[in-house]
Image 1 (cartoon, rainbow, N blue to C red):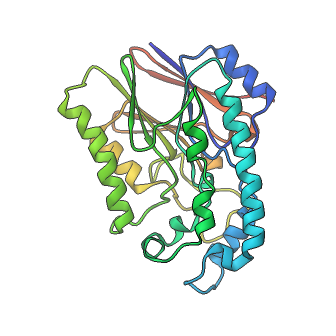
Image 2: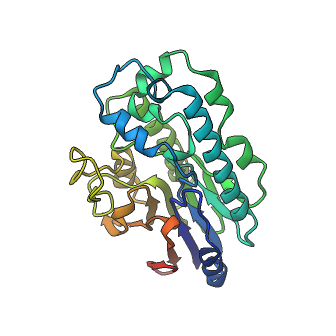
Length: 288
């Protein structure tokens, strides 16, 4: 039997009450679905996305490099504090970064163009990668698999929401995930339960619908889950897919034999308890 606490979207906040609730559950493992970073530039970012701007410019051109650098540094410092607090817990933590955990948000907006353009060198010196590698209990499982007993945890980071299926980025990420899942098929790991740990969940489910009142009218009512996540689930049918990203999408759904669960934002005290035994059970909860 496996018991896991699932959290996501802490956004720089890891409250004492949530910490106590996790410890009280005494899980075998903690699954963190990303966005430990606050994202202070969220409002500016969405203005940038929906504005009639010069398509050749980056977000830092839109708001200015000094502001971008200052807010990103604060975000990273808060994210490191949250990850260090998770590392102090007496349970192993498996983690995938969210879209807010990488300052290169524009790669989500203009992926093909970004890979060919000269970059601002500073942004490559400011990521959580090196910090996470130095942690003892927190392990990044992005595009990889971690085997714990009879359970396999496969990670899919960032958001790719919803993703352009004909893009080079989509094809590259699909190849990476196919390689991981296919490896288990080749090795005949039918006896193991696979937990697909994503930041953004699969496209066109109950858990990826944009309904927030503050959402841009062009997005409200639309599904913003990942088309790649859905493809992987339909093809490989993992036991369960856990995710966050769409705050208002908290809840459950199902694709074939795979349970889907969006645990909601941990910054608001939401979390889930996943139990896999003869079947799969998820209990959604919240601390005050």
